[in-house]
Image 1 (cartoon, one colour):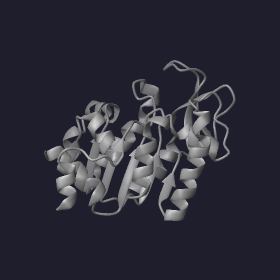
Image 2: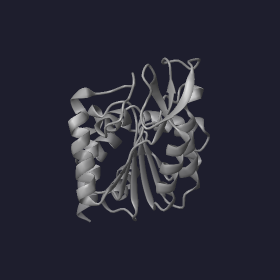
Image 3: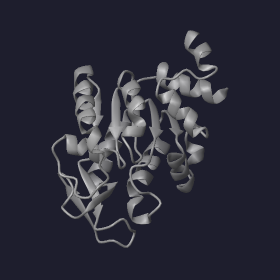
Image 4: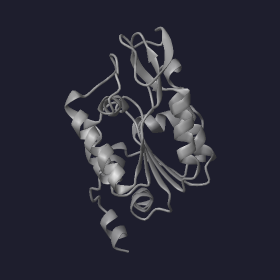
Length: 221
């Protein structure tokens, strides 16, 4: 019940600015979430593997990064929709790229897209700065999905940096989704967050705007 109320207030009746951070690997699994959040947030931050589809939609090369070709047009539409609604939609401006999907791979930071033969596995330092700045004025933050392959130490910096920034905010911070929760726990920052959603699926369904038992009642108050 506490969880439902928390998520309900965070998205439907938030203290603004409301910033949502979406990460994780696939745009396709977060479509309803993006659609719903664009109606509600002031700023939408996109990181993780799904960012490369947005970067490609923005005309940047993404090397061998995770890419959902079928969703490039969707990403274009969403960027346009955000602009029309006056929502700031932020995507990475640099990436930590690797020659292969391994912590021991050759690594470099690239700006303006990913180099041929490399894959982006984390957000780069300038992006960490960009995202952190966007979060500083936030009063409510909803975070779902890591910024990179945080299981590998070399690609965990982005996710850890975001967790750190959130832990220092004077804001309501709602963390949902197994990976973000794991990252926050791993960084030892769980106690600094307002709410950690353990029901990964439920928090995602909620962010999609689906009615969950108990939410309807809160929305009517």
